[in-house]
Image (tube, rainbow, N blue to C red; front, top):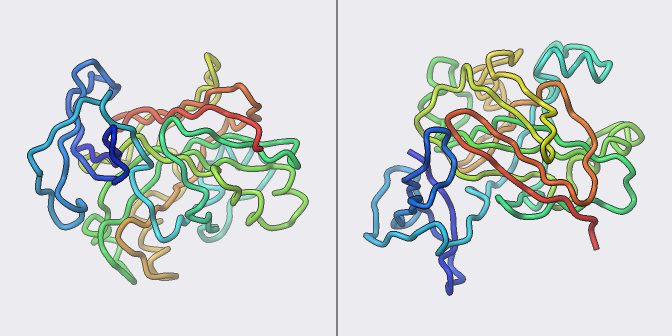
Length: 265
């Protein structure tokens, strides 16, 4: 099931809905519709009976979490291209909820940075309050998965010695286009294209620490709330983006997250 968050045309009230009518690649067609959910989707999906054509709504980021927990250095090839080493334990950092934007929203490049990279990632969406989750029970607390772009001001990441500023600018965490609740995350193709240029092309099977390991480990550090998002790390091929680019993050079984790039005002 694919769960989107949207605003109907003429309304200012966000809603959740079930997406139907995609093609075999999970891309939008002329027949794509969204069936509105009564309330939020955690704990069960009850439909209101209202259905919208995709052209009658604006898609939003599929969730607004209390926090985004990101895992760094989780693909060997990316570690190599960055000249880093494999950490002994998962390396985590936080991105603020204010960094989140949805499909079609612009990534705004800060004028003070001279080097901003895309980072395609599989994002985990937590479905229930949890702490100290045993490895074998991680499936019980995961609601689903979506596409993410861990946008990074690389020059600040190097100069600051920590990643809060580099990863935390407004618009630096695009999510979407929706949450897929019924998928095995163990072997999904993940790509990033900038315009017609395919820059990242890998698989979640190459994660150094897989989804159960990540969720269990992070839950021992902090309480996770429904809707919280965990970014699982990016594969190799990260590269700069500039104003005028359009970035597409695609993951098999989920779909494509597309965002234009502009200079911040």
